Every structure is written in structure tokens, then in C-alpha cells.
Length: 314
Image: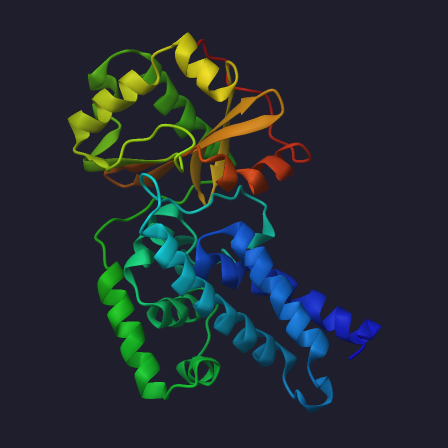
């Protein structure tokens, strides 16, 4: 069935919201784009004259496509090399979606996207649609072909699985830059105690190299252990620079709503280190160095304003 200008306009008007939903459900910007494109193909071939509410129809189709992808993705992660982290996206990317409320900002953080891996596929759908997009349980029930009572139960379970005492600190670009600079100065100082002062008592460090670049097979936990690891990681080394293709420029930015250190060699983004900042200090350091998960960041980096690299000697 041919798609007219109006139908294309309707879909494009919904694209940003669909991408934001899919990213939260899949933890991958690349997979989210594919799911949205598949949704458009379904829209293109549908009998649109009988679709009363395009937004609800598109959301339902997208959600079902994401449910299928989640099942496949979890099977692949059983054989994933090393630790798995979501794909980061930088501030200003429409994939992040709405960020007006604490719940909306939380739902897209690397920490929360990682925690959501604990949920069943349907629990994740209910949580995302409810917390990040304000859907009523009745609307979610129609999307999932469940009863409203079932959706409420799934939502309660999801909240229980994701419960945490951490209170994250909201940051703007200016505050994020200061946090990154302070973290980097401590990491480059060669002093473990400088890093310990910045970390929460139960801090963790997780790295995702995807089997392409080296990363530890398990998270590092505990303030002192994390501090020692970071001190070693940031010690200058020709071998480290050769591994990533050269000595990187270091930039302060915001990724998934938290301060981030972006490593750039030439015009290539080779790493994004996100800092999960809470009222108790830096609770988690998430290092994404898997090239396959940096493609969207890299594509936007060349066209976005990102300021000058940090004036540091590494």
C-alpha cells in the first residue's frame, strides 16, 4: 500500500518518541533505530484507513518488535565476551527522549538500563511506558494484550527489582564538566586516596570491550579496589595508546544524563566513561570501549559542538 505525504508526516511526528521508547527497551541505539524502521515498514503495509489512533497503533507494533528483539538479545548475551553495558548516547540526542522528571532521566541512565536487564521483557515494557512516558495502566494493557490488573502487578514487580537507595545528583553541562575534571585529575595523580575521596563506599567499575578491546570479566567493587584499578588504568602507557590507535584527546561531556569522559583519537571516539554520581559520591564508573557500541556517538561527534579537550597531560 502506498504511503502518502500525510501518512509519512504522521509517522515522522512519532519517530522521536518511538526511538526513545525502543532505546529504553533495548539498551541499544542501533537496535532501536532498526526496530523503528521495521515499525515504519509495518505502517507502510497496514490498512491505515482502519487505524483510529496512529500513536497507539505504532506504539503497539514497536513494542512487539522490541519484545522479539529482547528475547534474541538475551540469548546472544549468554555468549557475550566480557561484561555487557548499554550503548551510550550523548546529550542532545533525541534517542534520550523526555527528561522533564526524575523518573524520565533515571530511566535512560546507563546504571538503570543495566539494572533493567534483571526484568522480564514485559516487566521492562510496563516500567518504561509507565515511568518514562506516563502511559496509564489501561493503555499499557492494550499495548501488551493483558489485563490492567496484570500490568499493575508487572509494574510493582519491576519497581521492586529496580529499587535502590541511591539518590543521583542531577547535573547540567557546566557541573558535569567540573565533575569530570575533578575525576580526571584524581585518576592522573597516581594517588589512590585522591580517587577514594570521590567514590561512594560501595563503588563499582564496569567495562565493556565486546571482546575487541580488553576488559575485565567481572565488575570491580569496593572503593579502594576501584580506586586502585582506575589509578592503573590512567597511568600513561604507549602500549595503551597503541591499543586504541594513538594518544587520545579527553573531553568532558554528558552521556545518558550523567557526567562523561569522552576519549577521541583523531576523529574517532574510542571510549565513553560515564560517572554515576550520587549524593554519596561516584557510585559507578561505566567504561564503554566496544567500537560497535560507539558508532552513534562517533557519528554525532563530528557534527556536534563539544568544546575544547581538557587541558591535561596524560
